[in-house]
View 1: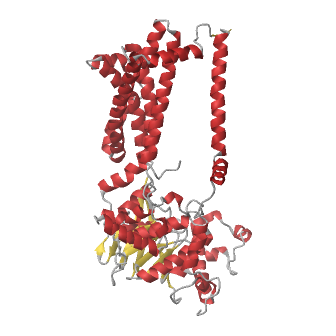
View 2: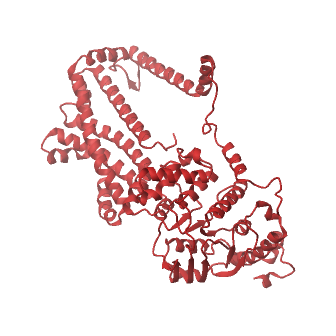
Length: 301
Length: 290
């Protein structure tokens, strides 16, 4: 046993096969400075897929605009009537007019403010409530039945009740927005808490963690991916609820703008309002996604 | 190094008249009955047995996650009342916190103890160096291979300077080559730290290679069927696994476990089935073995 055979494992040798198996990104490549053209070519090769997707995406949007243009230019009537639908150029004209019009900007800003208030309130209430419900059985047993009964009621069905509950129109619209995002956030946070890997909780206990530390260091970060799913869904529903509420009871806001355009036979403004709502929804979704990436640097992209 | 230097004479595990049963709708079901085991300070002890024999249950009771229905579990004379940093544990499913970097994972136990940042940082670096992982401190566990994750898991459990280290099939999820390397690494670390280890596995080679003593458990309800001292010289090398001494121990343990595995499988296996499976009964009939 004194002479070790050649294949005997030595600690230093043990490291090599595993490290070698790691993706190249872990072992930093220490290249000499290379020519720009070489780097550009390499970048192109690595991002070919993404460039292709961007190019096709842009072409597809252009094609959409062309089809829209042709349908409205020839006033096509084929089951659907395009007789009164504004053309892309008419919408563009009304857009250039609108961005110089402080009233249009006010509609947009007011809607944004309602979303920020309603959605932030919903986040501030639903996330802690979901976390606490997931951790303490009694709170879950008390709150869950009520939330299950209220959850299926669409936020928009709350409009008459909201008008009775709140002294001002503004408050009731924020309340509707709040309700719309509240339940998706609550349900997803709770779901995240239920799915926390019990082995991680046991590991934390073995390392001397007490209840509050386990909550802060294990349950909360473990639920974060689901919390952000809830925030994304909640933001979508918040916009749906807001626009509906504005159309019914509003005096300002982009939903009201769109509805008013119909009443005033400003057909181009209808499409403009719709596009503005789409852009706002898309932007707020992107904001949440980037916040999620910042909050969870460990996540797989 | 001071953080992990085992205190001499500490880490004496004593499990006496141990039994653990679960309540089910059909009444209580015994998982482990009438079991006595002990681990002396600085000793490496393994528990092997057929699957479902309650070896993990026993380990979880030592960790403090399960309360014995009867009997006592003590470490250095103190009764185990719940999980604590005095008993470090390594799980089969890695169990690293995905939202913490490797370094933060290793620091976790020290942070819970209230150690300040700079001392924590120094201790974690030392430990990661010991496991050959100093270059990976800033990585998230997601980017590590299974073997590296489990090395971090072991180092994290050692960071708080526990009296004993409990390992629940820690290499069960690794591929065969990595497992062999990890066994050697664990063996080397233990050799340096001289900490008491209780190691649960179903891999007989692994148990013999690492241990001073091996307990073999019976099929459910589990109890100790045999206690086998492993007199192989230390430090151990992988090459010993081919020695006649090692193979003799392995043969003995295998026959013990095979009996229990057959029992655990119950009536599913007949004499005919065994022939099909090419299992050698050494001239005995199945009834004799059972």
